[in-house]
Amino acid sequence: MQDMDISSPAAFVNGGLLRMHLGRKVRTVLQVTQSDIASVMGKSTDGYQLVAKGSPPVPLTSYVEVVGVAENENTIRAELWTNFGDTFDASSYDQLCQLANGEFKQLFL
Amino acid sequence: MQSNEFDGNAAFSGGGFMPSQATQTTPDRPSSASKNSDARCLLPLTVKQLVDLSRGGESDISIEGVDVNNIVLVGKVSKIDNAVSECTFRVDDGTGWVECTKWVHEHLDSVEVDAISVGMYVRVYGQLKSIHSRRTVHTFSIRPVTDYNEITNHFIECIYVHFYNTKMRGCINTQPGMTNSVSGMTAQPQVANSNFGDPGKGYSYEANQTSQYNNDEEQIRALSSMVLQYLRQPACIAFEMGVSSVVVARELNISVDKVRQTLDFLASEGLVYTTTDDYFKFTDA
Image (cartoon, rainbow over all chains, first blue to last red; front, side, top):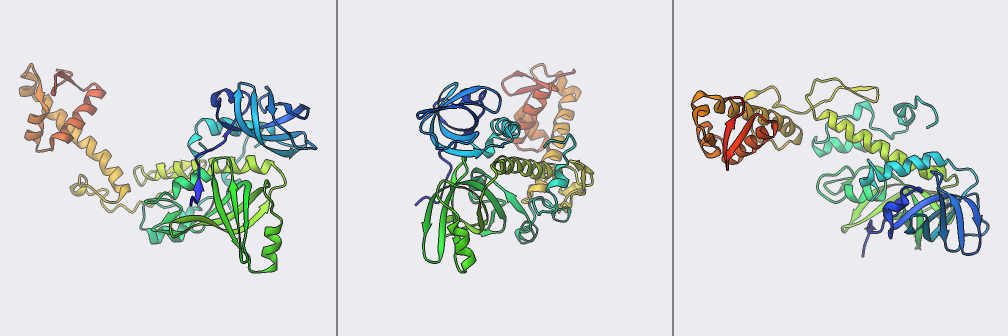
């Protein structure tokens, strides 16, 4: 029986980094601009407009974390949603995305 | 990280996050000594780091099967197994998942575990244990995350501590006696390297990694200058074809492999060049 598993990591992405992980599992935080029953439109931590398809939690807070598969440059097919509240430091998260995809990628993926 | 002068050391020190000056020693000291010093550290880690570090052999986490480091993880609970005297949480932090087991002996323990539900983000303090080659995190404390900036913060701490530790070790591996300033701290590396400064033993293979690193560097330098000196001799320069590595090895009484390695290095530096396969000539003839 497996005790630990790193076979299916979710890459930290912002709008600009999403395209580097097409078809793979990603995670990001969006500031919700619009939401309906099947999707959420939000601003990524670096200012891109992204769409997360799936069933968001109700009610939805201003910030939501989405974990799912990157369908294309601006769409994520969401599997897990987590409300991140109404105050969130987007710029720190953005810098984390850059570090986690760059110099320190080996700690994450 | 709002202030321009964010002093990472001041911010992270004092909480047991960073190895204090007293515990900064070479990474390859005998394990009993490392156990004592490293046990005082609390390392923030990603599950990926945990897996990589506990893969057996040399590691920070587990030394000869004994787990000595306290770790912090932040992730989402994806599964809970509630037994009578223990509760096992599967914590997934996006880089991987690991099982964290908390023993429930007292009322306070059950209050703690009852507060956790699937889908919640949690912070786990514990120690990696290996029982019958099954690795779990023996959990001292598990509590829900309420401010989600904690997640960003945790991963940035993982990066910072990793960077700090590897940079420190990189500095320690250079010439002892050098004053290394890393992030404003001055560390006098205590290199347990009895062979340094003893030219007679300088070229021998050392089991101790630290001294081997020093000796490799010295060795490369020594070999390079020997080979170069040999090739600069008028007799060698006279050979239009150059000198074969086999001859160099024989004349200097060094293994052919080592000579070839050295010649490759010298060629990449531009100090020698190859005329034909395996024949070398000093460049500035």
